[in-house]
Image: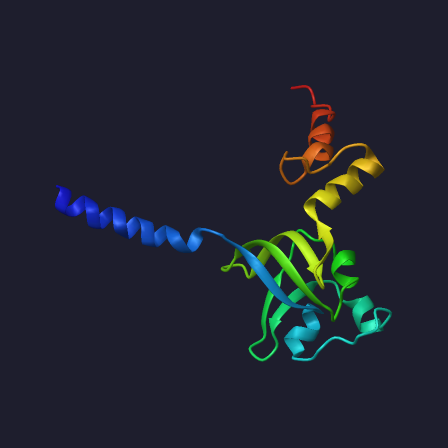
Length: 153
């Protein structure tokens, strides 16, 4: 019996390994996704119409191999502010989805964005953090769903 359980356990560990996320630091240039997919570098001027029309910004780690990562939890405006600049993003990599869940973004060693800064901004503006550990919708979604009147049966 043990003869079969040990290899089975080792096999399960290897099968689950790719699912696990990797926390690390990534350095690259913030670029528009369309620019990266076309193989060009986005223009430097932030007022450029190409940058204005860009919906999604990514971290281009290696231009030669077109290695890039999405940063879905950082607002488009924050990424656009650093277009064509080299930044370092600390976060968790989901290699399968080519995405980094960012915790911090720094430029030339100076912190320019973090989840703590974002939370502080929300609390300053709204008086609470809408994403305060309560799922994707956070408090806003919870309050909305609690206040919906259910139709009588």
